[in-house]
Image 1 (cartoon, protein in one colour):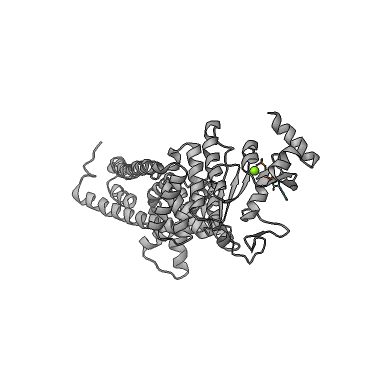
Image 2: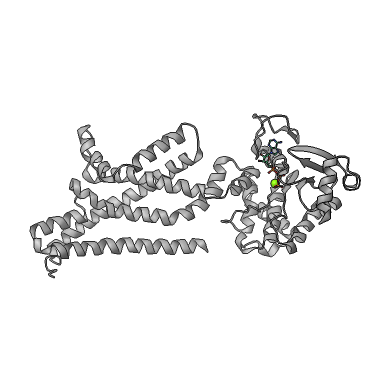
Length: 212
Length: 217
Ligand SMILES: Nc1ncnc2c1ncn2[C@@H]1O[C@H](COP(=O)(O)OP(=O)(O)OP(=O)(O)O)[C@@H](O)[C@H]1O
Ligand SMILES: [Mg+2]
């Protein structure tokens, strides 16, 4: 889990992992691929990296089912029947199998974000990236999305999550990365990070956050 | 007001022939400028080096010229250069050149209106740039382009009348020939022709509104 104040570069770091952000210098290796190397086939690597955005970014002209099957069919060249079967499986997993034929605009924010997670999972990625997946949601819908993510974590999915949900980070994270001013300031287990932070910046951040 | 000159059988037949020329020129120019406009607008949108600049140059030059001038070029100009087109072809060519530049701008702003998040979502799934354009951006953009495209095509239909200036035998031209012969019939004739343009263009607008509603659902 990546934590840190607003503007500290959390999204930027996350988006470097699948090269949505151009990498100006340095080296980044993901699953054996050098992301910063122009010779790397980035589209191939991206198939292995699912991403969930703050504002869902579902395709509004496609049904929920089509949102999930489009990339497996067009990018992975999966046969449409197979893709549909997998999509329905993941829709069940995120708890809204009955919405398969709805359009994104007919769903609540929480439901849309769960579809977005299913869309990511349907590519059978090795990693899932989440950029503040609950920040655009009404409070009563945050829980349903975090529940899905909790289940994924338990099943062993590798996830990199930017979040402001401290309780969730503390409970679910294997490792916390704290960022400030474009730098990684501190990394550690949730225990170390929340109970015994090493850096002064981290202590300031935590005292500001945990006061609320 | 005396409409008898208008409703004379030979005159109606003559007007009908004119209407067919108007419709033929308009229909051909609409189809061609739509195809060319999509290509030009997309090329400009892609920001490919050189190619997108050439598209921009074409669009900016053409859309800042009067259509009438382009019609003159397509007729007298080409003749001067030894290219002899039938007059209908010449007008179709001129109207296509002109309208495709305007369609291209509609296409480009339609593509630009699609949320950046859509592009990021698609690219993050491994779609190539072309696949993203084809499956994600273009379908969303096309829906938004319908109203401005239809007004552009209505303008095209009306502007076929400009080809009177090079004596294309279209509706307005044929009406003019009749009322030049029977000056008393000028106003009834102009009213009748106006009604024909109105019915065609207004039905087109209604149809587009219906299409838009259907796609919005
Ligand atoms: N390592 C870096 N090198 C250069 N620029 C950076 C770096 N990290 C962040 N930035 C710049 O800082 C700005 C804010 O970064 P970013 O959007 O990643 O912050 P954030 O932590 O996600 O904030 P928020 O919580 O508001 O989403 C961006 O304009 C980004 O370009
Ligand atoms: Mg951010």
